[in-house]
Length: 509
Image (cartoon, rainbow, N blue to C red; front, side, top):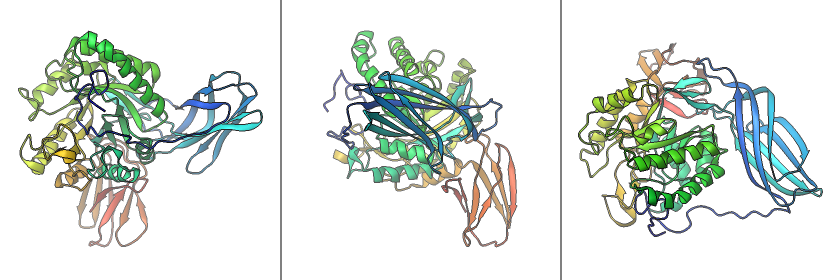
């Protein structure tokens, strides 16, 4: 666990805890003569893009399997089910003649699409029988969805969206460190989801339990290899490091490619990408990601876009992702001027503000200043449709060997809208309100809902109102960005809440 210039992270250039030892559960599997070494599943919806959100469509199921062992006298069985209803969609059995093979099937019936507001999952049960006996079995959960960048638009299931998010820094509970329990991680993810964030980033690869939660609760993720900060800038050292970078990319995609929550793979963060050799490294990494997974974004996150807006390395990725600390870490530029120059240099490119916030004690003002910065930045991003997303940094104060506050295992950066364990500060509630997809206006017995059309911007589908003194639901009609709806109700003293289809509250009042 010592810092190394032949590893990723490179040297001490990473901003999270350097805890040692095993931090993830270890599992042992026993199989027969032939086993399933790897399976990747792609659920591809079939529909025509017309700018409308598609909730169900015909689809194509693609599988790629790699087996280990002798494939003679081996039968492969598979069954596709809708996870919630347990309805069987398709069942097949075939003889195996090769250790690596593909299966592609058109599914004629309507398939429910995975969406962050309606995360429908399907299960694929795989069995290998060798000489008539079960040799191995595996169940893969996945989703059918289409997520892509189209010029300056971010399209999810046919709809152009602009999405809000917060970045969670795991491993920050001082009593658990990087070996945090699945229960605590679920607690933090629940806090993240209830902020009305629908996406996040991770600077390093996460445990399956984290990704499983995000699959089931509709949190979009950019998962990144831990190449952060001052990676080597000269080509010779990069060449020495490339095999490690390549292996980390391959391992990450191989392990996590079936999770529908992952919309993008990140290949680095703040690598001084105004340097030509670093740009070559980014280009090589993005190309390798596309080779392994051509249907997901490959992105690089930059903190040098303001110094070289025309040529900065973030433009190599599918979506331009920039960390915006203008006014704090980033000096000598203005919010309006820096972003205008970047957007004018890349008119047909989608952009995400991938980090923005306040770090104490380096910068003063406390949570009140964090709140002010958030409101100022989000108001600015909303003005420009080219900015398709904003990720506040960070959900929580976080443990890090770089921390400026406290010492020892609790050495932290006070950067969050919650503390180390997810206890909420006032700024959390500001974010929660601003990230709500509905503008809520209450006057006497009149409730008006307006679907936001800036950030966030997406169709509200399947939402409902619940009143405090009764269990019945009042269904909200589908609202596209800019649409409004008025509801007249009795009982002026009642409180009410608005919920997503899965029951997660987006508003309480």
